[in-house]
Amino acid sequence: MRILAVGVILFSSLCSNAFADPTSVQNIDALRAKADAGDLQAQLTLGSAYNIGKGVPLDYSESIKWFRKAAEKDNPTAQLNLGRAYEDGKGMLQDDAQAVSWFRKAAEQGDPDGLYSLGRMYVSGEGVRHNDVLAYMLFNIATASGHSDAARVRDSVGQLLTPDQLNAAQSLSTSWRLGIPLPQITSPELMAPQDLFQNTDMDRHEVYDSSKVLASGTIQINSQNVYVVLIQTKGDDCHVCGAKISAATYIKYGEQWSKYGGSVNFTQLGGWGAAPEQKGAGIQYIELKTSYAALIFIDDGSTGQGVSTSGEDLLYYKEPSSWGNVGFVATSEENSGGCDSVHSCYSWSGIVERRIVQGNPWPTLVVKATGTSYNNRGVPTPAHDSIYRFNGRKYVEALERKAK
Image (cartoon, rainbow, N blue to C red; front, side, top):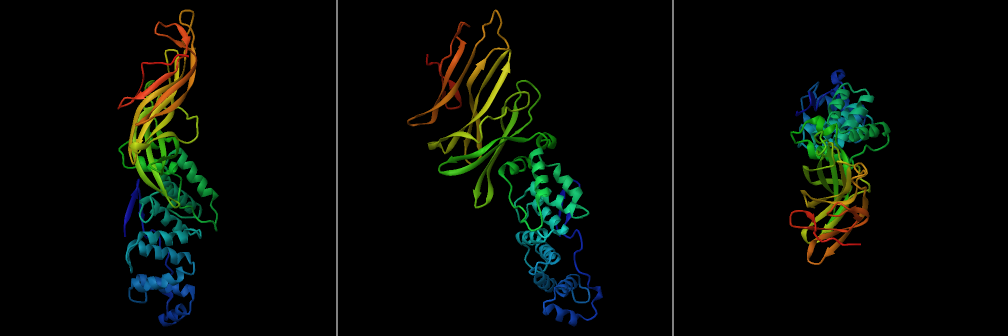
């Protein structure tokens, strides 16, 4: 029997006794005859008797034989006990995947112990991919079904969920009904926090109470679709301190998502501990074809001394898990908070054109600007187009400007 600790909660694979009581067995031959004839209760009772050595010699293999016959007739108690046997390796080779399969069959019939046992497997990641959202969902349903331990275990798991994950888990549990298969997958957005932070020494409250998805979507690199999830967690509370940004990547095989890579806190964006809201849906990017990498564009901006600047941070991703910040391109600026009779007001905005240069995987970025700006003497002048090029480490604005 294996014990798994989550917080201060201890899980046991035999946390409750779902065996039929064999103490009333008076004639084992008569019971066996009934079981051989297909009587479900007799099969379940005989399996329980052999499992604990009550009225018959202890024999796990014989116990499994009768539990399997009852389980194949969709009896949830037998399914639960068969799952436990696979989990503990009693009477058969230990097989967590088979344990999960039988726990799921019992759980989908609303069996509280089946729901609880399946939840344990999602927490431990044994026989199934670790998923705290689905574990919380199962413990929540088990609680509503009367399981005595499920509520406190659910609450322990809930402390490791972000607000978005907790909302999703509660929604899944309240929407599930008997006769509907239990969900087996969640979106990468719901998987990313645990995949990124479960093995770090970061403060739990800093991670799970403040984390949310900054942006997510599919990018294509070398004809392979990679799903990117950028997660923000709160940065330090200062004007120049942005949100901490981490990234997780996934590849889909059939209906299942598989983690491809990840990077924790590789950059910061925004200010006052938070990242700005993203305007567009999905991930905006350019594939850097000869480098097997991508250049990703993330909205950002800052305000200081009466001047507000907006633009795009440039994030570099090379599969499977190399990430970096390679610069910032300004796409608008205005000084309405600082202009007066001495300092003239100005305001300009623009769009970024991405120009591919033959033989160079890094595109040249040209900001097509309209409005007014300052010249080098501080005099308002029509805005100029700005040109940004990659210098081997980051994008910098070129000295030449294109006049209107």
